[in-house]
Length: 147
Image 1 (cartoon, rainbow, N blue to C red):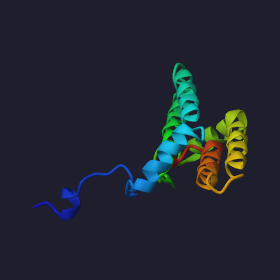
Image 2: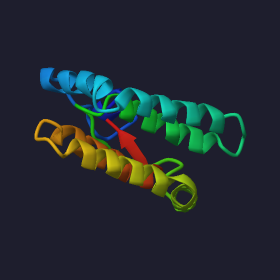
Image 3: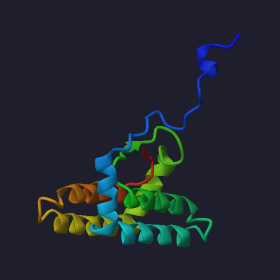
Image 4: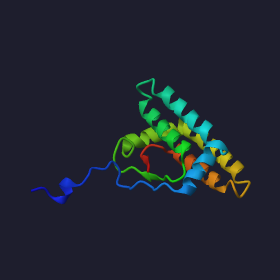
């Protein structure tokens, strides 16, 4: 006889996905049209495709694609630590350090500048907050998961 643990569905993340809300959908639409989300996501996606052309760049391509997805639709999502996988151990630390030294700090500064530009108005504060979350993720992307 099977126990409840054997019959339970297998999930890839210990965190539940966030629920889609009307406010989040409106925020995502405005983000794509006004706050720079579309070119930002496209830039991350192109960088991911270029990185994916080399064998050494494949882990970095995956991180760039993760950033592209989050940069396209940041509202109604959150970033959590991924407990297991390639980015959680010493190898993840090395990948994060290499990412930080080569591109992460430049990406984070860009997000901080966009956050400052968005924060000038009260209406832009949610978009500034999204840029700040992206800046943090752009610094240290390995070992993170977007739910």
